[in-house]
Every structure is written in structure tokens, then in C-alpha cells.
Image (cartoon, rainbow, N blue to C red; front, side, top):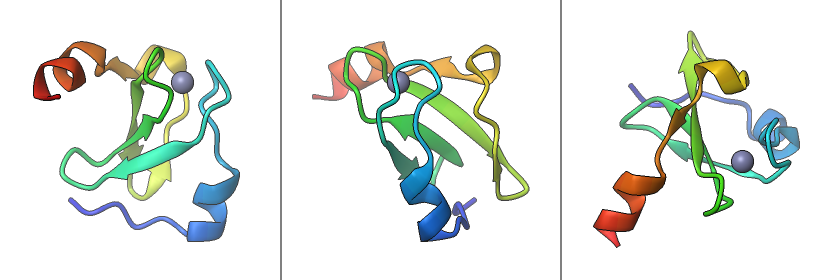
Length: 67
Ligand SMILES: [Zn+2]
């Protein structure tokens, strides 16, 4: 599901854990923290980002093996 977020909204959102910016992962419908040492992915439900650390998943291991 492509993530349909207002670019202005996206530009002000930051990771609640490390305060880094996000990139959008359309395939997973997630906002992914751009900080490689954090790299949490937050779900987007009904075009609403759920910026809760409890709801986020770690992407660090997956990203490392891809690169
Ligand atoms: Zn982060």
C-alpha cells in the first residue's frame, strides 16, 4: 500500500526515539528512521503515522544484509 502523506506533514515528523527524519517505505507502508543506528520503522495506518516506539519494528538487521 503506497503511503499517502502530506509532504508538509512528513517534513515535520521526526523519529520519537532519536529525532531523525523519516523516509517513506511504500511497500511496507512504514516510515523508516533515516538514522542507521536507530532504523526503527513505524507503521502507517489509514494514512496516519503511528509514531510510537512500542509499535515500531527494528529494520537494522534487514538493512545491513541488503547493503
Ligand atoms: Zn530513529
